[in-house]
Length: 211
Image (cartoon, rainbow, N blue to C red; front, side):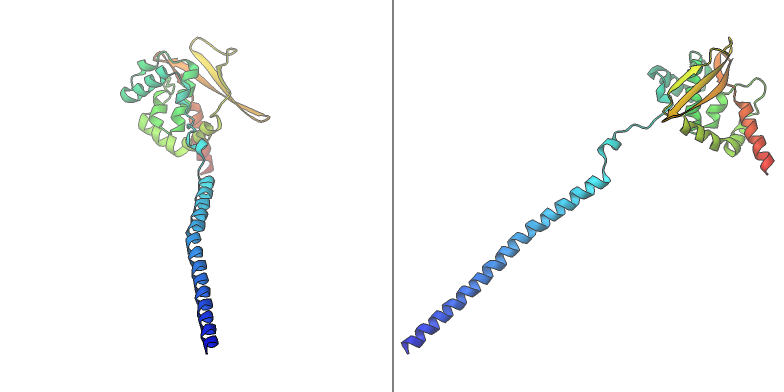
């Protein structure tokens, strides 16, 4: 009888030891699981940041033709946009005015373009100019503005320069390709203005022929 009681006690102790071991294993698993989950979340978060964030791009300043001018001339042209006083532009060089023109077409502002376009008795009234510009010219000018950003050089063609009439050449290079554009300027109201209305008329004529 004593042997049976002793065997029963040993059996109970063995079962209790097994239950305790299982309980300890479960507790260990539950303790470690949150750590593993946290590490996975951290890896996912880091991976998400690497894919979607580029710290270099966040600090790249957008190109502006206006910002190619000196700060003094940037401020002068900003003032011109407020008061439309052409005297503000009398000390701008032909190269400066070429950059101003490219700035104006890059933002698609026909009123500014009208103000710096050589008249010579050929320009229509401002409302008609604005209407024609939006309908026939703006798409072409947008492509020009995009094409010549990050230009390599801009200069007066001295071989054709006259006292009040010059051509300014802007050049851009990409790999082995180089392209240039020359636009004429004439002095009017003591300001170098873009002699471009004949180009605008060519766009209008081209559109009329395709209708």
